[in-house]
Image (cartoon, rainbow, N blue to C red; front, top):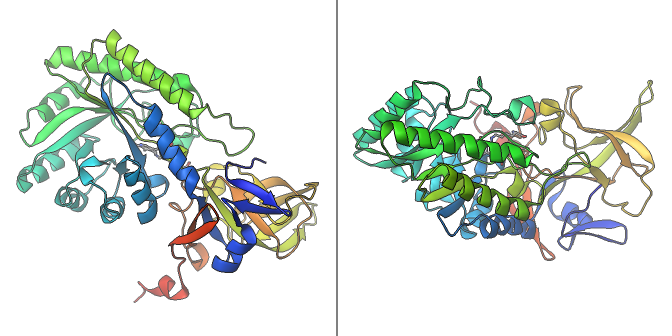
Length: 430
Ligand code: LLP
């Protein structure tokens, strides 16, 4: 069980950035998402300070699918990150957070007319084209609007990164992007490049998520750059921008071995510079777009323990007041987490429990075989590293209201997303 920067223990109780968990419960109730704001800011700075080159400009985008709400986007914006958006809702949230939308990249494999029109209306700077169908539509809508927009083409490098099947994105039969091995891609690029309203600047590639092997990223750089050179030679054009995606693996449990981020980013830049020389490229900008690695470890979910139950077969369950509605990642990916009894931090963790939620579904688990002190009703249970893809993938299953989100910083806490009320749950019902 790992205590992250900013987590301390005072009189047996877990504090996050100087705020005790019992105080958080008293003020906001449980279940609750809690983020350490200093950690969020530090992660942004680690990316910005280390992913930079004297040879070309660099841009770090926040992949807002990991955790999109106004306040986190205000922070990312203030810290100098651009933003990756994939839907009307993500565009709207970034726009309302005050983002300079020229720094927004609009991704997705099936953008709708409505989304594209809104993107142009709010001034999204770059649209990332996924396929021919999209290209036709984007071209038409941009022409109708009379605007010009920068476009990237999403390419698929076929790199098989070692991660969960559902979060790999660059295998040859993945739904994302256009394969660099498909000969028809050159005609498509030539066509895009000929459109006066589309300013074709380069390529985007993202090979998957929660990847620990540096070599997967470095290999992808090579394939992308080799392809870029081929395109330049065959079509006689100059590619100036490469967006290399996100996917940097983070710690959830001791089984995960993430690389040291700052060091990796510096090495990554070196690889990009070297390969760009090898392939004779003249890039003006290189972009990356982390999501999970920016927000995951900064966030935790605080629950209250209800029942503790031993089954006839011998398994001991700790039931908490949330579950798969606020964290569907075990149900979806068998994702592993660490848990702690946040009010019993000095007690020996000599019991083994399965932490389960309150939803009517057997798969509603949060942590299998968690080592905890003896648990009882009223204990506070904290699951760490829930800061990415938890709030954003949460649901109202069993009509559970979505949780509030609180940011803590140096002894103070503030609500940044209100929890849903019962009235919110039926607001759209007719
Ligand atoms: N860029 C693109 C185009 C992406 O599709 C993604 C993630 C990212 C950047 C950010 O990747 P990250 O740095 O967060 O790994 N729901 C899954 C994760 C899906 C990731 C989808 N794309 C989960 O809970 O693990």
